Image (cartoon, rainbow, N blue to C red; front, side, top):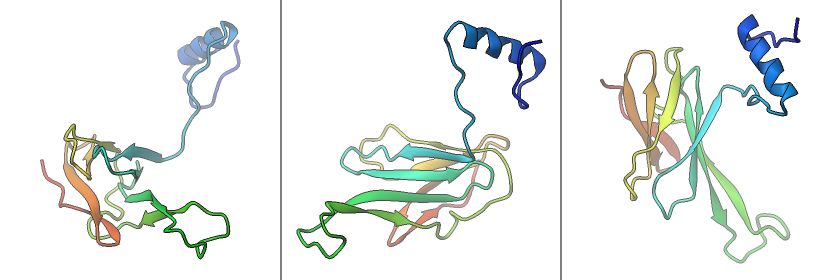
Length: 135
């Protein structure tokens, strides 16, 4: 019997073995996080989602304003925003991030694939906030 991954059912294990022999590889099993860039063209912000809890945070690059008070030789810093109102842990489910195609939208949608509920999340002041979930 071909080697199997504990998470693969026997038919999938056989497929994985066959693909590996043919020089193909399956995607690596990832952790609980999903990352998505904001759709706004002039914003270098990336949102982070915990797929199980729905918790949302964000980070972006900030230029060093010519002073080396951040760190000697540093060009900038990673500026991160923690979860704020509505962006914290939700009821356990299956969450994902979806960006609109609006070129000037700085936020992203947090969707619950099990219930169909969604909310918009964005950076406000110094934290990520999300609207109440709606359907």
